[in-house]
Every structure is written in C-alpha cells, then in structure tokens.
Image (cartoon, rainbow, N blue to C red):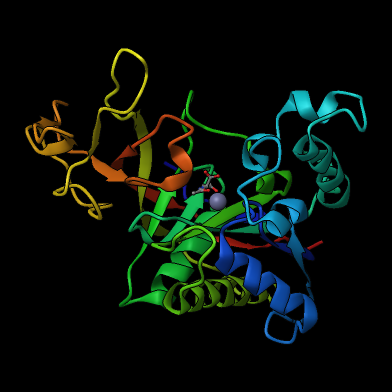
Length: 313
Ligand SMILES: CC(=O)N[C@@H](CC(=O)O)C(=O)O
Ligand SMILES: [Zn+2]
C-alpha cells in the first residue's frame, strides 16, 4: 500500500446543489437562502455556486417530475440527441452537464456538494462514490473530526451492480450530504442546522486545501453498500410486511443472523438469515418504496487515505 502524497489542482469552482429531489426541504431552503445572500458560503480563492438542480420538482414539492434526476446522469442520457419530447429530468441532465461539466472533462467543476434529506434515522451521513478519490476522503475525514462529538457516518456507494448515476457525478469530486430523519416536504430545524454545519466544514476544508495546507495520511471508517433488501411481497407484488419495530430507526446498528427484520400484518416476525453481521441503513426511506427497497445493508471497513496537497502549477 502506497501513501504517496496525492496532488490535486486548486479547487476553483465548487457548486452546492439543493433540490435534486424537490421534496427534501433542508437543502432546498439552504440553497435558496444562499442564493439571496451568499456571505455565509463565500470563501477566498474559490467560486461557490448555490444551485437548485430540479426547480420544477421543487415547485411541485415532489421528488421528481418524470424520472429520478439522481439516477439519470448516464452515458446514454448524456449522449442521446433530442429536445422537448424527452422527460424533463433528462433535459435537465443535459443542462446541468453543460453548466457544471462536461462530465469527465477537465472543464468540469472541481467539487459538487449535493444536499439530501432522508426519512430514515441516519443522522448526518456523507455519501462517497469512490474509495480511491483521496480528495473527498480527506474532506470527509476533516468533516468527521470537526463534527465530533456528534457522529457523522460515511456511506460508500461504490459497488459493481448497485452504484447509480448521480447528478453530482458531473464534478471531478462528488459528495452527497444525507441528513435525517426529516419527512418529505417538511423542515426540521435540527436537521437544517446539522446540514448547514456540514457544509460550513466542507467549505473550510476546501479553503484550507487551496491555501496550501497539506493533509497527512489518515484512516476513515466507511460503510460500503452490500445488498438491497426489498419488503416481503405477496403473489400480486404487494407489500406483505413492515419494517420490524426492533429494526425501525436502528440505522448503522449491527443486524445479526436471527435478528428481526420485518413484521407481517398478522404479527409474524421475519428474521435476518445472512451469514454475519451487516449494518443496515436507509431503513424505511419513503422514496425507496417505488424502488422496491426496504433498506440497504452495508459492511464496515477502514479506508487508508493518502496525504494530499495542492499541485504547484
Ligand atoms: C433519499 C435519497 O434521495 N437518497 C439519495 C442518496 C444519494 O444522493 O446518493 C438518492 O437516493 O438519490
Ligand atoms: Zn434525495
């Protein structure tokens, strides 16, 4: 394992996305607030752009209009020609790619922070898409330390089948902030304030990096996506059980073989039958009923992070 210093260009352009899902209110309110007055998010040497990514969904207070924007940043959508007949979010993908991308090119924004809320009891969670991007790994290490003693979990979505094409993936470095529990369409002041603090720490990190601070090697505890678990269903495909009360709200706590997972409407318990402990999260997330997902399981691991500093050209 090498711990060579990784050099990255100064982060000159950073975007903060809110309203990627139009019913996740904390990010929407923060971004609207910062669009009117950006003094709280201003930092020297870097342009920071607050941006509502799905304005029509925000207007309707719906997750999306035609299709989930946070699954739509695919090669296919980026390359298909077409105009008004395309689903709204597919058109929006092309616009966002023009403003903040093109995805994968040197012209893409340096960092995108994408603000989400969950109905699950996940607390403050940082979502990473890659275990080899030492810039974002150092950022989450910084945020976790700054948030302590409040805990801040790291979800790693890198997975051969389960990874999805997020809006933020247009940037060179992408991070999602997922804070809950907060119902859809509702603002909770504690959740709003936690999200605001995480953004502050992220921007402070970027400013320190830009000013030439070298961040030493470190280790970060992450929870890597392992499996998606659907609700039990009857032969018609309808849900036949609920998340068990012993699992509800227990995001990030170990689920051991034999532990209750679901409760049927007539009161029977369905237990977890996997081989060893896993760490469930996104438990009973409202937006995931349509995705046939009751929760995901994750595996805990420690990632070794290389030192980073700004490259000198
Ligand atoms: C509840 C929710 O919307 N979660 C986000 C997670 C992410 O941004 O990676 C999503 O499903 O797109
Ligand atoms: Zn969301």
